[in-house]
Image (cartoon, rainbow, N blue to C red; front, side):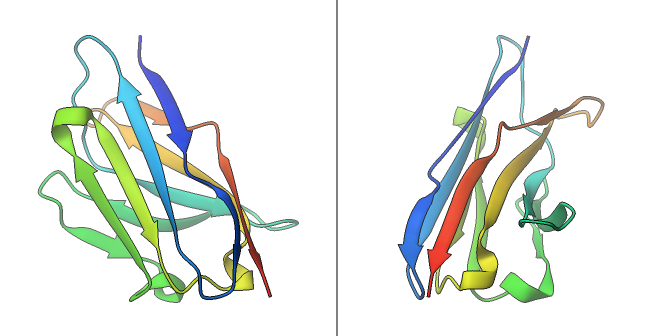
Length: 117
């Protein structure tokens, strides 16, 4: 059984930074292509970033140059470094984890990020 734990959200002022973490645990689990999504109040969940198994990353245009997704395969953990935060980044952030074969998909519990103006 795979257990997903997200952490790192909080309240920050405009221009500040936060780092989100998403750790997957399981006796035979290996991290595959994974990423981050977010859901702002009253809006559907949107894709934010994806990191491939070779660490190639893609981002939604609105966060390019400000957010960086990374991974630590030894720890089965994915990170999202968020810099130059804006009020419009306020949302619940969810990690999306896939196993190495891409067969199984898991979601984190969500972590609130609030950026004050």
